[in-house]
Image (tube, rainbow, N blue to C red):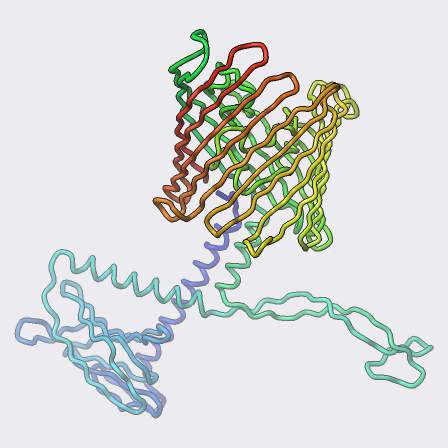
Length: 552
């Protein structure tokens, strides 16, 4: 959806121009039909000889009752190539003449109130020729006049479209032209090399006329309006999950149902050629399984967005600008730094891919809040890419210097062993806030094996005062192949967490994403999680789920 006032003005202007052009064309056509060449006097119904290089069509229109003449019938000849239309009116004897027709193919039509329209398509008119077309009208019914009116409207619309496509505008524009002149010691300027004069470069403004068709002008105006407008997008998702305990003590929840609804409202605006604005406002309502099941990772990735029930929250709002041929880009504002790092084409989006957070995010990134920060992207347009970002990690900190979370990443794109394209990333993070883990690093890989099959994997580890935590995930995804519908996708993944505290988790998930329409998706998910707390007994859950997403 785009809010704009410019497009309405453009359509109004085009309508006025087209109507005026059509009126002028009709007037000239009628003039050609009603005014014979100089030196000839035309009486109603009198056949005039064809003018050299032009043709003539004449004839007689009669009614069905015994061939009675049909006066005041409108006869038209429409050129099938350029849409130009000529018209004449029958006299008291039902006769008409259409003189001065340029050589070409014409559709002949006759209309009279109360009678069915007469059509004679594809009449070939040649130079210096005369063709006779007689029309015997048939009585009409109750719908005849309405059909005749619709036919005339259709013809007018066709002529307006032809006018819109072919009419040429010539508008003045001011342009700056680079000019080389020759200046002598006295300051006099010459256009040609002159003895004693030195060449100098100057710039001159000139008024020029640029020729455009109306279609080109419309497209230019609409493109300008789109650049200046604010775009709005909506992403609405509802996730329903069930949870059945497969292992664990009886006090843990069993045979439960959960549902969470999320709505994201996106705003985008282009502020300059390479500068844009983005904002994301989100609202959530419902209860995910993570509120009752104490797994190490989130079983529903949307839970990370849930701040307060039934409230609007500003997730991100930032400006992005690009330099040096779009090789260097800066993004600054309120953002989620992890959105720009550890990306993975096969497992990166809980809205269309895996639902569990353990398969769409590296758990060692260790950032729980969005905050003020910036990201610098450098893409030298070769196989490498570089990113660095800084963000406030604690919203309660009194200053940014007390909660600096920073991330750096190097990415490389290659085609190993004659395989399709693959992406390989290495990242490291640091956090000076009041957290146990100050340092971490990880890798992210997605490699196409075939155009259909993509393998992916992640690994991450973080430092603790006396030990380290470890995380790993891997899986395979299938897109546009081995599916029910051509644009469906599906995947299977596994994730494992081993913490220094002794807590462990094993999670497996499969999903199938039906792309029902361009804007509507329906996904089915099945998860199994097995947690081994160091101080408690093991517990496991099987979680089937359904996710419905609409984006527009």
